[in-house]
Image (tube, rainbow, N blue to C red; front, top):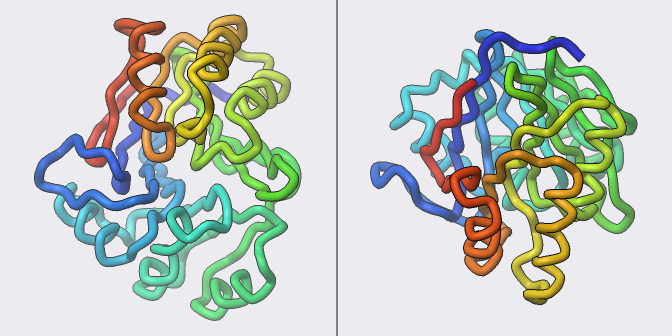
Length: 240
């Protein structure tokens, strides 16, 4: 997997606030810029909010080349149709398990649909884990930066630790950062502690939980990772 020279991760949709100019809503969306190539990973739940935030952040939708959806839930895929309605040039990467009607609707706007089953390269230094999980199938994004691998998760329905293990299995690389939804907000304090220990055992350097991670999870990860905990929310930028 190639190493990218420059990578920027900008949260454009989240239910955690970072930039007071932006609208907060339940869901997730992250714009990933790799050597000038733009990938929108998840589109939040509401097109109007997504486009409002991107406008405030001076993001030109027409300069996005790829949209990748982590999974089918509305808080991650709900903003898609309003974005692609404005332009037909997008390549849209979706788990192959997505409903056929949803995929047909994307194609009806003139976009190319790439169905993801196994791990797949999206761009130099950027790949999908492939769809993981059983009941809710989900893909995560892998970006190989100069500091190490960045794993971007949507909601981590397959299990955040399983996703990290898959990332290491696929790339054989050390993981610098795991950012996005961890989906453990309803688990017990003991289970959170166990997950933190597994992160550490797997060599994860930095953490940036948001969306469905929960306040207790964020507090516990912040205590465990100290200066390697990154507080993120809508409008937060992380650059390499």
